[in-house]
Image (cartoon, rainbow, N blue to C red):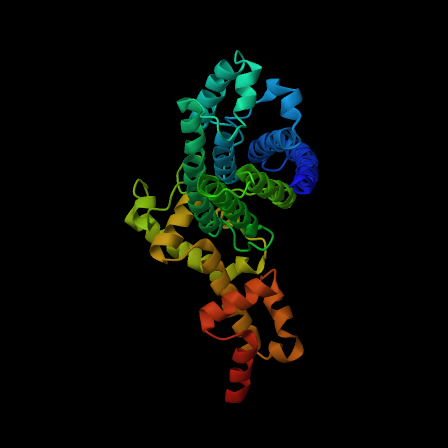
Amino acid sequence: MHYLKQILDYIFIIGAAQGILLAVFLLKKQENKTANRILGWTIIAFVIELFMAVYINSGMYLVFPHFIGITAGFPYLYGPGIFLYVIMLGHRREGFKRKYWLHYIPFILVFLTTLVIFIPADTAFKIALFNPDFTPPLYITVVGNLIPLHGCTYAVLTILKSRQFNRAIKDSYSNIDKINLGWLTFLSSGGAIVWAVVVVAYVLEGVSDSGIPGYMLIYSAISILVYTMGYKSLRQPAIQIEEPGQNPREFEPEAGKDTQYKKSGLQEEAAKAYLEQLLQQMADNKPYLNNELSLSDLASMLNISTHNLSEVINTRLNENFYDFVNKYRVEEVKRLINSGEGQKYNLLSLGYEAGFSSKSAYYSAFKKVTGLTPARYKEAVLSEA
């Protein structure tokens, strides 16, 4: 057990050091500034907890017991921190809204109450908390047992928000290859795994006499998460979601296309005119050939609002912007193959010429529209010739 604790100390220290470097980078990063600051400060909280794990694991708390309990409220920071990061990543305006502080009320209450309890407490009481035979005060038991429930609740909310975010991306961009959607999946899943480890640790401590403290499992999981989440977040580019509302705000839940545009002022005749204008633009000027075409770009060409354009595509064509544009790109590839261009150039080149920016997006969209891969489609065309 002694050697295991030493190994874990090294893991915690390395994870904390990595977390410090990544937090500094995140706090200085200009892209997605508000979101990265939230994540940066959340990582700093993780770092402090990892140092506290070393403090406890190494027995330093016996020599310097004054720090015992000061991070008791920190677990109430992590769920809201990651959840708000996901929200702010899709926010068009920088700045932390006052209503977001509501998510931190549990942390503030626990932190302040803990300070009131532990600052005046004597040394013997603080050290006794680490004695498995000691019965802690009811307050400490309640706060500790609510941590998994609080964390798991935010883990679920973060997963739902991440999925919603990924859907919203496809209403704003025609190519998402440079937008690392896998990062949000990793972040929400990684957070959920850590909270699952927390639940397992609590259960093991309650039913097992293995002698392995649950915090060893918890802080090992945190070390891995801190090391990977910060690195991956540095690769996340700036993102702007074209929101369904008239005013800039964070993206809202998609309760369905009808409810999403329920308060829209777009009249029936105007919607028909916009649709006709849109289809004419796509046919005549082929804006989809620009592999960086976004909803705002196309709205500017049509001289209509992004909100109205999004509404027309979603409600009139039953498609998101991403699928709408890529369907045109697929048709362009088909046209090139049918015209004989497929004999002069390889199929991947035709995809890039049609506006796709990656092989994976090209093949995925082509099969979704035609049911065939580009190669199979080309074989079918040649066999009919």
